[in-house]
Each structure stands twice: as structure tokens, then as C-alpha cells.
Image (tube, rainbow, N blue to C red; front, side):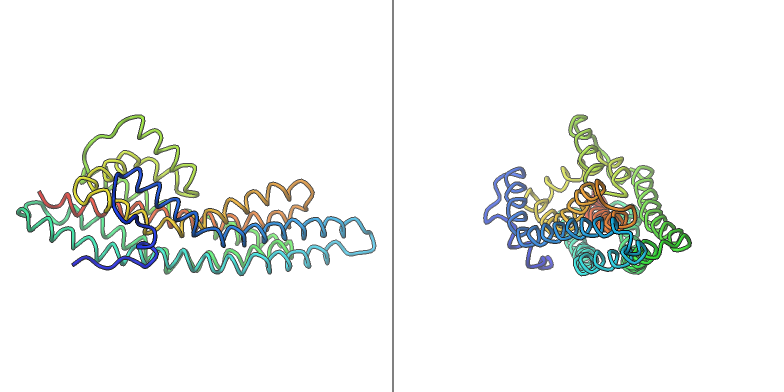
Length: 323
């Protein structure tokens, strides 16, 4: 039997499946309802950040107060406001990646066994074994390297902004590059493997592919441009899944990750807006610190979206292994 999905998936799914479009709209609506408490908390945090930046700007106008002291105090207050929510979202992102990976590893063999019962297995397991290996590589990379690096990145951001230390700034930039490079290289290899093996073949409507590229590039930070290059593969994968496990199965895959993705993405967008507002009257270091925290949220959105897309493609690779 298929593994039981996480509890929040059952809460998002419609009672009866009608069509993919209607199911998707229902899931998004339910996900947005679930985000209301988080949205209220994010707005409160961002308003508090604006107030702190204004206060720091006022203090900087007094010659009797050391600007270095003001900067250090401002950094501490901004860090206090952001570190708690960032920590919970980092844990949420790591937990989501783990759930997606574990559920996928249990779910895919179930699909394979079900399809094998209907016909013979004639294709080589190597076609989809490679894809699963990439999925395991990425999830291991995220849990063992990227998540710890995000914590280190935030610590170095706070220290470099508060102390205005050039060496710490270089360390911060290196960690940022390392996180980005790790995710991009893994995805380049994965999408290259998909193209070379042709494990997923087929064509999708050109207009749909173009729309998918724009949506993915704009909504998935860090690796959006790479994932968008596989837009046709993603659309073909969705089509294969729809024909094999039905619209309800595709909707279940989406429901698995949409709430954490939207929650982290909402924080990312809110911090981007706060950075833009504060840049009007804030100092370079304090505004830069808020921007650094928004970048860390971008890393989380990127890794969550990437693993979700890979689950979709990995599912199809298991299906294509049976002909």
C-alpha cells in the first residue's frame, strides 16, 4: 500500500477530484488560508524593522552619539527581530525537504510495483536509478551542507555588518557563493542527465513551456533559471503523471510542499519589500543586514522548490522504467 502522506496534505486536498485546474485552485486557496497567522507575524516583524531603522537614522543625526555604537546596537536589534523567525523557517525548509525525499522514496516503488503488475518490466533500471541517485545527492547535500551553511551565513552577516569587518564580509560572500554553487552544479548535472538519457521524452505546448519558464524563473530564487530550462520536461512529467495516477495524484504531490514553499516565499518577499522601503532612509549596513536575511530565505525557497520539482521528475522516471 502507498505510504500515508503528511497530515497537512490531507487537510489541503479536496474531498472529490474534479479537474486538475479546480483541484489546484482549491489547494492554493486552502494553503493561503493556512498562511494567515504567518502573514500577520511577518507583517508585524517588518513594521518593527522599519521602526528600528527609522530610530537608528534619528540617532545617527546626533553628533554626541558614536555612530559605531549606534550601528552595533541597531544590528543587535535587527538580529533579534529576524533570527527567531529565520531559525523556524530554516527548520521548516529542512523538514520539508526531508519529508518530500522520504515520501518520494516510499511512493515511487509503490507506483513501480503497481505498474509492473499490469505489464512486464522490460527497460533497464539504470534509466531511473540515476535520477533517484541525484535526488538522494541533493537532499543529502541540503541537510548536511546547505542548511548548516545558511546558519553560518547568517552569523557572519550579523558579525560583518555590526563590526564592519572586511574579512568577515569576504567570508560571508564566500559562503553565499558556496551555497549557490552547490545547488546549481547539482541541478546542472541532473538536468544534463535528463537530456542525455532522454528518460522523459515528449513535447509540450510552446506557449505553456514559455509561461512555465517565466513562472519558475521568477518564483524560485537562486536556481530558478536552471529549473526553468527543464520546463518542458516538467510539463511532460505532469502530463505523464496525470495519465498514470490521475489529477488527484498530481495534486497530492503539489499539496506536499506548497504550504512550506509559500510560507518561506512570503517571508522572502516581505523582507525584500522591507529592504526597499528601508533603503530610502536607512544606513548601508542595517539595510544590508535585512537584505542578507532575505537572501537566506531565497536559499530556502530555492532548495524547497528544487526538491519538489525533482520529486515530480523522479516519479515519472520510475514510470518510464516500465514499458
